[in-house]
Length: 304
Image 1 (cartoon, rainbow, N blue to C red):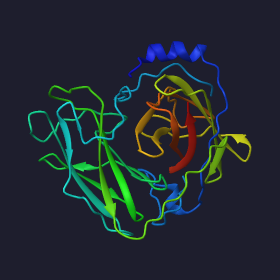
Image 2 (cartoon, rainbow, N blue to C red):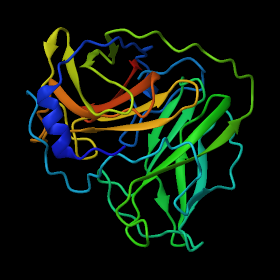
Image 3 (cartoon, rainbow, N blue to C red):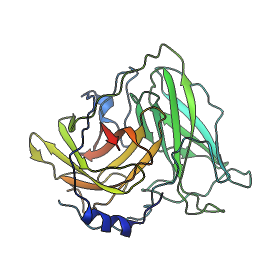
Image 4 (tube, helix red, strand yellow):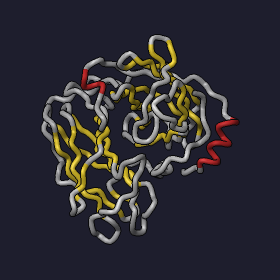
């Protein structure tokens, strides 16, 4: 369900925080540090690496969280289509897709959402691979998402967008399709929940009380060598981008930031509007930038 930001701010003041168990597998490889377009996993199926709270900022192009879980290629007459059902293992890939509107024509008018007109997420079925990229659109409405080498296995590709024309204008959509990467694909168990994780020397800790289907505040604290980090740089119009996928079915949830942006000195605490649609174990991917480098931390959170 969709909760207005005013309702969320009122709920924030009344909600007590409870330290949740979160964990992640870390890596210091260059691939784990990502790029300006997202976190690029290695070809291995092993999990890659991944200021006080301010009033809700007025962020241009910031939309409410989408309804639904993103597990369908169709919603309200909009459809995600792609000729690509298989991608090559261990090599960069170009995933092509089109979004058709209810009138059957390719959608070409998109509104900005966190500074971009299209967000694409590629997630491996066991949550040991994650990429977040921003594709380019051709004049005919065909998008091309450039992906770093993918490990073998089944992946789900999500397209997150907001139409700027037609019956769905201003509505948040997340549609998805699966794609296969040939090769020997052994599943890796999801890491058990723990309190925090470390990526590229940064320690990320998450606090909050999350219940399925209810809006709650989630607080992320970033430290380095035991000291608060206060030099977070804006990324996609915020100080951190947080996306969650549920273990098992890969249901999608985008957790919107509520911390105002004031130059290149964000942190150490960041707040998010957390609304997970279903109970279970969720893998959170937190992306934040320091010194021009994008870092991705992966954490497991359990929603009751």
